[in-house]
Length: 243
Ligand code: ZN
Image (tube, rainbow, N blue to C red; front, top):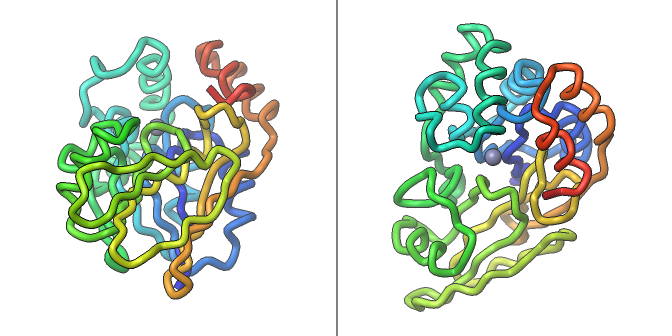
């Protein structure tokens, strides 16, 4: 069994297509949320993701905010402007799909959530925050998104001191007995770890390995569409530097 790991697509169709090309042939897609928000193609990205033959997808904060199910005061002015624009681009049927996405899902013993546990919209950026999630995890493996930083946390069962491991250029995680993992496969559509290439992963269950990969995409094409849509300049510029 192979799972394609995608998260934080953020309405970037150019990045999404590049990643889906790399993920051809996986059995099931796991999406850790934020299909929309920031980018110029919320509707087309949503249609592309929901049409994947086998998909397990949880809600992100931008997905919910775009359908009035998450308070806009949590967002900075640039994100808020993009969410308000996004809401105007989606049909009511598309909105109800986003609004019905579950907060948590499960696959092969792994838990899938946008940000963390027990609060799905918390951020994990450091070992202390990872510890809260490890304490609340039912099993030994969690897939998250939300920070747009490609990395993972690991800890021995019973230990209180998780270790943080950067994977900004990609790499493989070999899953070992007695070790617990929180894996952030990074952002497809708006990386913030200094690497502008789209980030994604493949989980090979029987081989007990998670591969994290980066793929270049047409950043200028995505930026041109955002400019034409009148989205904030700051959001356009950050795609090129991956911040
Ligand atoms: Zn996001």
